[in-house]
Amino acid sequence: MDAMKLLHLLADDPRATVTDLADILGESEEEVAKTKDSLEAKKIICGYHTVINWDKTNIDHVDAFIGVSAKPERGTGYDKIAERIGKFPEVSSLYLTSGTSEFLLSINARTMREVADFVGEKLAPIDGVAATVTMFVLKKYKVNGVMLDMKAEIEDDRQLISA
Image (tube, rainbow, N blue to C red; front, top):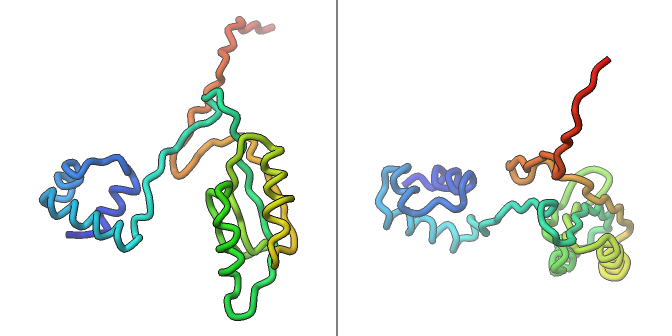
C-alpha cells in the first residue's frame, strides 16, 4: 500500500474513515488500518487536529507568536532549551527558525495578561533565553490550510444612498 497517498489523504481530511480511505486507495480496510496504525506507532502521524474559529464562540481566547532569542548550550545546541520551552502547556507549537530569533512559539491563552505572565514568569527566566518578542494575533484568515468564515457578525442593513 502507498503510505504517502494515505498521508496526503489524512492531511486533507483527518476525519476520513478507514472505509472511505480504503475505497479511495483501492485497498482493503484491514490493510489501510494496519498501515495507519503503523504510521501512528512510528510517530509519522503525530495527531489529528480540529481548526476552531474562536472568534465565533463566547469564550475568551488569545493567540500570540513569540520570537525567542537564545544561546545554544555546549553539546546539545538548542535542543535542551526547546525541551524546556515545549513542556509548558501554553505552547501549542515550537519551531527552531532562521532569522532574528532562534525559536518561534505559538501560544494559546484566555487573555493578553496570561500571555504576558507566561513570558515574564516562565519563558524569560529559562537559562539560555536572551530576549523575547511577543506578537498578538489580531484576526485569523486561514489556519492549517482552512479559510475561516470572514463574514461580519452583524449585517449592515442600511440602504445604499448615492448622489
